[in-house]
Length: 348
Length: 257
Ligand SMILES: Nc1ncnc2c1ncn2[C@@H]1O[C@H](COP(=O)(O)OP(=O)(O)O)[C@@H](O)[C@H]1O
Ligand SMILES: [Mg+2]
Image 1 (tube, each protein chain N blue to C red):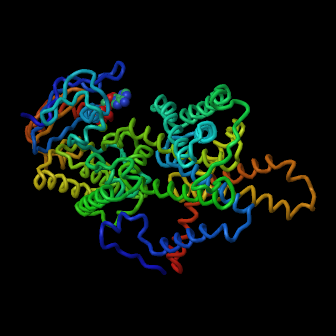
Image 2 (image 1 turned 120 degrees about the vertical axis):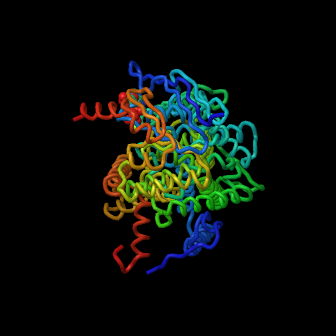
Image 3 (image 1 turned 90 degrees about the vertical axis):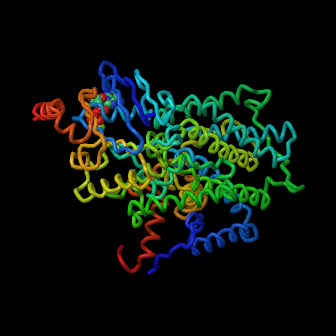
């Protein structure tokens, strides 16, 4: 049985973690992630980039929906704005990618005010519908603002270089995405342990009490929108670098739903949960593909014919199962497991 | 100069006048109690003072400042904190985090320093955490520190809510039915805390309370509301001997029976 330990200074109390084990395992994880390109093949590396982009997007959405309690079905819209922001600035205006990528985030953050300000008084389902409508509007604007967005033709995103290295493929893309993901995670973890993060959580749990404690609802809700969309916009920019061709079809409703599914699955409000959810849901189709390949006779076209249907059913089943049996998500499972081991061999 | 002053404060909800032209004055350092039958308008009056609702008419001044139109979130910064009749804790958050929210308006961290969490933001968080620990010690809830508030007993949650209000470092503390739902022992402890606040910190406490034991024991002044209007005010002894008050209480009780 592990015993509790006690902190000596308040500095230790407010640290991100006080446990040597957590620091140790995080170190191992980071080392593993850094070494990955040396070990895994191209296909796996591409998959890892996809996972990391999902992590960035999920951590961003989680800030708005999980932490602040503002349900958004507009994730695809913010991803699109970030992706187009990055693509247009980089391709048509020749900005270097290290500038166009954050600039895409800034554009997304500014645009979020357009949906944030009018929906300040909305909550729950009403806000979900409003943000959904927002993402449709984004699609339309992109489609019709042809002089800027190339409309239905889409944009080829090529030639992103940092220090002369092409960062749109292989290890370079992977390291760029990893760097962004780590920065975003650290930033959000930090915000969550200051008055900002507590303000957001307070709004989610009890907005009247939050106001009585001095939290300006307007300001904090808009701040949550801005920070969240900045992060999601950057995820969109990374996506545009990875897939190298964007048009509005990339940013369909299904993307918003998947994003919400990720944070529900991971456990609302927790950064670690959002990460776990992103990893799990991004790899789920992969696991299904492998499973089908094992079951089906070689050469069967069943999986490739019904790939979208199979995925849809699997997503649905997983989400329903979690909502029914483990509403606090993967992070809840993780906490239970940890409690079990640290108390072992006692039951509680 | 009176500390908290209400002039003709009125609140109507549609056709219903929940608070009707109430005048009252709370002096600095007092424990001032507001009593009255259910539905008398006590909670509504608190909601007007803390600016949760705008007044329909009247004027409220606090510490020499007109606060009639001040937004709710500015109240904490002016030195006013409150608890709610029905628990209004952040139930998914730990006890420490609930109390830290009370410190919100005394902290300055902005977006960028929060994201970096270095230098000023870090120092500020350390100070905040130390202050939160002091409050936790004062309220004797050290063991609950890291538990989500939603998992605590009703009495414990009330105590956390009190702690959160104290974290505001208020000059005026509004307590709405603090001890309802508590057992006798818990009630006496809360009574003792409130007296400590007045005597050791010189805090002004304005409380809505149904527990006549506590009201009579610790109040400096008592105000009685009935059907939205103030019907009596005075020392505990004066009020409890007032025939108008007795009639209001007995009248409402016989109607309820
Ligand atoms: N938000 C509201 N909307 C409409 N009526 C309200 C509202 N809040 C309180 N009331 C009404 O105002 C009256 C006074 O209520 P309240 O202030 O809660 O009484 P007390 O706290 O003295 O029991 C009641 O008739 C109540 O129904
Ligand atoms: Mg009441």
